[in-house]
Amino acid sequence: MNTTSSPLISAEALAERLAEPTLRLFDCRFDLADPGAGARDYALAHLRGAVHVDLNRDLSAAVTPHTGRHPLPSAADFEARLRAWGLCAGGIAVAYDAGNGMYAARLWWMLRWLGHERALVLDGGFARWRSLGLAVDAETPSYPAGDFVAHPRSDLAVDAATVLAVAADAGCRVLDARAPERFRGEFEPLDTVAGHVPGAVNHPLTESLAADGRLREPDQLRRSFEPTLGGVPPSHVVVMCGSGVTACHLLLAMEQAGLAGARLYPGSWSEWIRDPQRPIARG
Image (cartoon, rainbow, N blue to C red; front, side, top):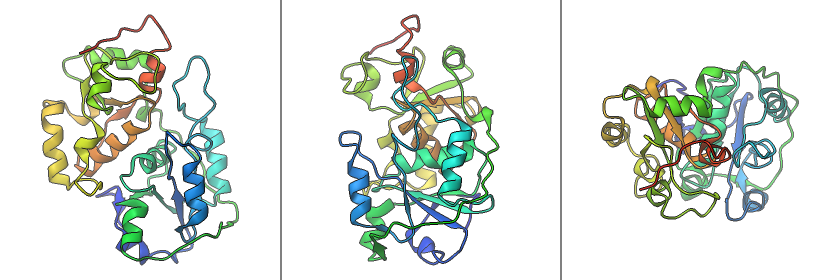
């Protein structure tokens, strides 16, 4: 199982490794419009041995007047959750969601953020697994506590002040993964203010997806990022979205394209607009 050349694992490859004792599977299915849908889907059927992970409860901290809609939990709190789920320091973690990897990518990035490099996303998620007729069940697994120890990487995340500076620097780039109409400020279904960070460039999640909803091939992804990056190296890039979830999928796509090294603005647009002094652009 390769954890360096690609952040993805195929259903076929994963099916051959399910018996590995340190492998842990995480079912990240979620629906922003119906937050309980993921838990219901998990209860009906999931990959054998998978633990259910909820975006709001497990992958986010409580919202405050100063945060975005999905603030990161503290490193200590998330370390405790990972241990409770049975993750060990040398174990392999595979995250999946319904299909396109958007929610699984959030867990994948958070594992990297805490220093766990052996993290992968199931390519095609639950949809492709089922399409291949691979085994599922409805049992909730129980694991002994793991010994995972967090080693937080502060270099992977940035704050709003850094975003403002990066967006104003011609040698850097802020990429916004939201839909074009949200980026332009024409339509805003989730946040109280519409628009984008001045100087940011739009690169919607859909640009990274093939017709079947899976990530495109690495060379296709690289070509799609070339005009957006405009020659800016990944190490000079910050990615954001509405609340720090879709942006993780953008980082997953960049890594799959061989463009690893960009940083995340976890608070993203929903945090940016909490401070009325921060500038807003539209159009």
